[in-house]
Image (cartoon, rainbow over all chains, first blue to last red; front, side, top):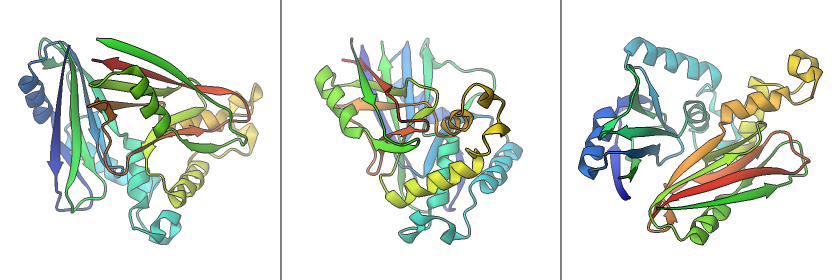
Length: 138
Length: 138
């Protein structure tokens, strides 16, 4: 069995941003040489998500509106956590979207359904952040 | 390839409670002797969550308030499931917070970002419950 580890770096211009990282994950699998196994992709920060869904701009906008309804950014004073910071809503939004994805690797490729794409969802950006790729298999 | 399995026993004195289990999981990783791989940590009950976020008491209170807004405990009769039980909202809260996490193991350690901590979130406590740790790797 082999393992492989890689970090992806992000520094978004805006507080929230969705980035398609599918090709970067496939690239890491190619580098690893692993043909059959699992790849874990997770945000290394607790105000960001890695999730799988559709690369469709309208849907991404729908996520923005829906998350803002479920966990509004403002007023900041509604959250106890914001005594220290201003990002409590980002912790809650990330909870809805999830921390990580685990994807099968088959014949050296991400074993995906037709529309599955992997995204990094930044919920408290404008600073350097990371995602981890860990691959195990043979 | 090696595998390792361990159960954590949890008996929390209140209906809802958050418990940081990061050191328990690291202890299992050390016991396993696995240096490179993946660890799955999941609630074995459907009214509890395992999730990763910050160990900050204000944020933990924000979760309590937020989850109660999204899936209120009372009135109990608003849920059909409560014809049999009184914990329908605990099933819903656990759905929001998730069942499990998968964490990379690198050089025998949990490969976590700076603020990532692993929690067991009990939504229907005052009885003995379990979480599962399963480790695979080399």
